[in-house]
Length: 227
Ligand code: ADP
Image 1 (cartoon, helix red, strand yellow):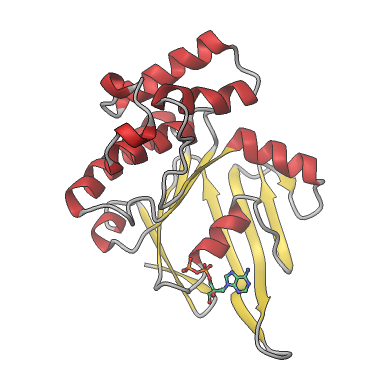
Image 2 (cartoon, protein in one colour):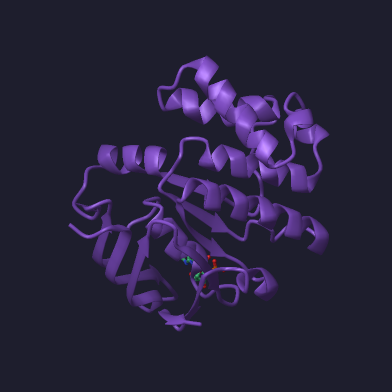
């Protein structure tokens, strides 16, 4: 068995376009990700970054090719298997935090752990530990509306890694923040990834941030290029 967390082979994806035309977004893509890989994905808007992340994250399917996650063929897997894999092994961060507004920062980090079967006490301990790592221990009882944009995004990071996923997928996680705040969120992301040993695939427009990644790839005309 390979030691890849995720391995995509000859993945293609098109969307319907005008008339009988098709818009090919991904064209026979190959990409393998191992534990500890920290990969920056850069491409112009519309090049297909979100499409690729959604397929990696088992939120969408491809038209052809194979996607193997932890040694299992995900193209052939049932919806239930894909959902469980997504819930247990994959963390997501988006451009907007998508925190639940009526819950505190702590509760937002606790909830996905409860859904995954953890006891409240352990889930709370883990949430406090994570919030402390990103300098938010004093904000644990605040609701999202009482937090700054950077703080909201750091809570979203803690939530994404709360269940100790094997891979973190981030779609422009600092796209909505100013430069200084972006740097702090990015530092928090790198810290959480490094401490856990998980892999991360991070789409960003920000070349400075991309330069901090161990490995960089670009998406152009439906193909992946090493940078
Ligand atoms: P990026 O994340 O790099 O901005 P996306 O993956 O969101 O790019 O989109 C790639 C291309 O596919 C864009 O031209 C977009 O308009 C198109 N697209 C994305 N989702 C759909 C969809 N559900 N139906 C049709 N076209 C889509």
